Length: 186
Image (cartoon, rainbow, N blue to C red):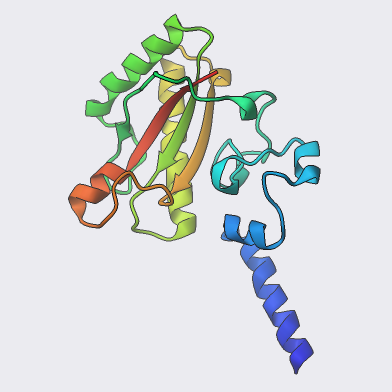
């Protein structure tokens, strides 16, 4: 009976990892982290919270393009935050001017790159919010690409609801957490 329990517990844990719901806490339980030599040797360099840059849970492809993992924020450069409607990843007309401003900055500053962090409010499951955060970050990237910013100059990551801009609940709080943070980087 004890052996059956251990096998069942292991099966549940492994299915959580495969399903993508095994957040960075599970990685820490197994000792997988930023200093995991095997992952770094393979080119997998997790960002904050154990996520691989490039999307939710390291998607697409799991490996960031060469050099992107080393991007560092540029001190003193503040770019606008792009906000989204509830359960949406389309760029609203009120947010398009912000992205035009960011595109102009990037086109004038050829040595600058952009990290796009997709975020959600607290409603929804961890998996759903990670996916929605990724769709938001990708929508921003795609919009900037249409404005002439090379895709190679952008990096996307989804934090889902893990990094709220404002704590609490209610529409006024949730509206500030449905966003894409834009970070100028080199």
